[in-house]
Image (cartoon, rainbow, N blue to C red; front, side, top):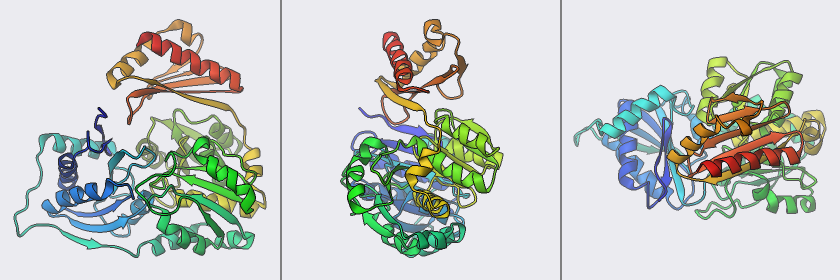
Length: 451
């Protein structure tokens, strides 16, 4: 059984098992109650289950008297950007994002356009569990209005912030793979605004995801095999909600999603120094990049909501995670795939360098990711035992910010329970592939012994 996952900024579950319409209606009603029946923006992705969940969310919102502005199929970051211009009390995005097709999620967005902050989210969860919702009579039902023309304003704002003329003069050929998700219909408008030749891959909206939706080297193999034959200057592989991205170079090298933040941060911090915010298990490359530009680094728990919250608190310049997410508070409180693509194209155009050359100047480490199947309760118990395992820890420094991180002189390991699957995630990074493999294998072996 795939269990329902509850967080302060939303719920995630497996459709047909842990995410039935009744749960979705109650959760939407709880959020609507939190906003006191205010104006709510609503968007969804293309998954087969999303229209059903959309109907359930809409029912909950209307029953509490909300004014709903329905954006239809809409990338999550575009919906987040729209919150402020529409002066909404919040928004709800329906998207499984980087998760497998059977999963879907209802994500809550606050009045600032960011994922709902923890205090507000806990209030929503309390309301959800108590089933203490606003109840409107037949005269007080909410209203719904379709919004279909916002993308123009969104790309106008992006073009005002990015050096569009440099990109247009560079005359790039760009490959983009949105995995049949929410961004498909917006690619031609994006390409037209920035004037590059678009080579779309898996760009027909579909409930069937043609590849693994999490952007990473193995999900970029199709693009990597095509790009040298198209004369492409760069390739972008995205999640179905357009919030995560990995890069494929013009030579056909599929880059780790870990380098998306480092590449963009190197470009952004060269123009404006300040604080970079990332999570506790993102590559050390971002520390090297920040140091080179005289910037500081703040590390948080894993999750876009925590990174965005810290970006606001620290008045950070750029933030993101090793999962391929990047946010610029100057533009919006969202990890935005369209913005990421625009910034990388700008970096290429202004420098006159290829994307492989820009990536080649970044320090690189070997990073290895493993997983150990187990339930959440067993996972927490195993991690708690691992922090006292002296043979594993050695002279490493322990950090319990989120799960367990152990730092040695030239390597580190991070272990935490997954928020979406029944497993413990293990990430190790070192100066050599052999040492990273060894660190990951050691952590995995000890966890299996404990379990």
